[in-house]
Image (cartoon, rainbow, N blue to C red; front, side, top):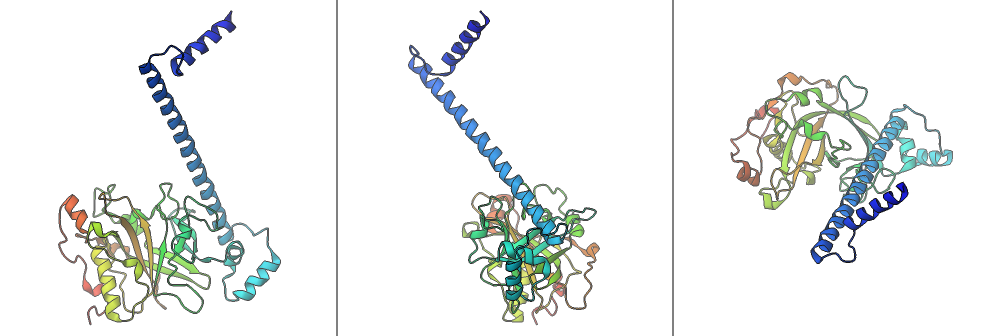
Length: 351
């Protein structure tokens, strides 16, 4: 009896959900719409869980690679023949890069931003360089398809033992999970989550970057961070990513001044002069306007020979009027009120 009752209940449920003989047209349409909605929901949830699963897997792989690079784990599967070939091809390469080059010879560096009072760095990733600026947007360091992609250097300026650009430009996705450059926008003290725009505490806790190429390791001092438009629809476009070298002092001064005008924070203890080597970290940021394609970009300069790596962060302050793009002002009001930094930050500026 109970078995028949269960069968009747199932049949009743089926008749309520599935188009049935004798149903009115309106009832059939209602059931079809309902079933379609259920299918969309199931597919959406499956896609979401799959996406999150891929992100989790990629995060774990990146952490394992970091452990390998920093020497926390040994490279158990050493291909001796491959290692010898690499040592002959790259005799000056730093030893910690050899196991990474065994995986992919597009590896050209490693970037780290330390997190105070934590054993886990704020940013800690291998840096790739391909034949274009598209491939590593969708591929990991193994050359596999990837949601997070990789941190990669602009292909137009190869980083070799013999030469490197005066301005190394690195790109990375701003992942919601925090992967890649997903945390980089925390430097932005004018963001939605910062009610107190004068708060530059995040910069103060993260004033330097360690960037290693295959051949050397250097410390860079952060000196600016800017919100910039990359689409002419939004107004003036500042092509920061196309500048890799400086033929003259005037070109260097002009480029750095444009950056400082737009920076949301000013760091007087980090001065700049023609001949400095720059490091540029570029990522997407949620659009403040519908049509402008915005980027958040952090800039740093290499510590000079004989210079201390320390920074007097207490001198840092919020730029009272960062320079934005036309559509930003059209949407939120306001205007650029002029230069909010002392020109002495650039040595012999304009001379």
